[in-house]
Image 1 (cartoon, rainbow, N blue to C red):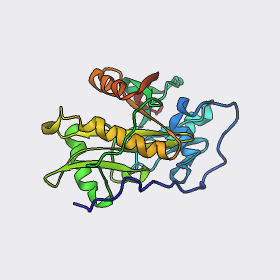
Image 2 (cartoon, helix red, strand yellow):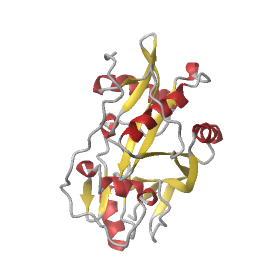
Image 3 (spheres, helix red, strand yellow):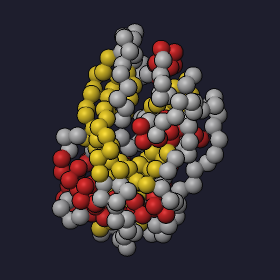
Image 4 (tube, rainbow, N blue to C red):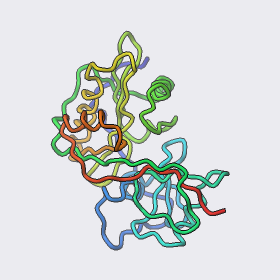
Length: 251
């Protein structure tokens, strides 16, 4: 267990990228292409490039990204990121698949924005660090809130609540794009559900985001009605629907 750290310890993104110059033509709202906006913006230091296709390092998060106006060459570049079986995650985008590509997993999702969240720090929430990652991974494995890998904690501030020294709930920041930060990995130990821990942590992470002058947003499954009701009760509203897909590149 790590020592308690103040929640005001903010994540400071590094500047710069080792890839090609970001595509900025045409204009688009960052929330329409959040992974691309993050990897060509505040998270550019994480970006791995293949032509104009991008991704995060796989031990950070499995998000991949295409430019807002992908053409055949961009899809061919994206294929360079595919696993040996030809698959790769294409998360949170409604971009149509070109000929030869197929979706092996396809789930409906929602993107919600928290511009009306009553953000508030929580006296029991502590800032989690790299020392806490084994416990975080264990909690994720038992609750399955979505992708969380050994270096995901590097994406932003993660807060947790402990009971008896054991991590029982957490939430943190994932995609960081201009003006917005995604709240992710919201999970609670099954034995501790129904106590409002998730809502408290979402509000606490939202306070961290707000202190930077940004707006929190999040994703969840369209069928996860209990989560949607929770987020609506906290002040999030539906912005748009989206897809969570695993796709296979042409062989």
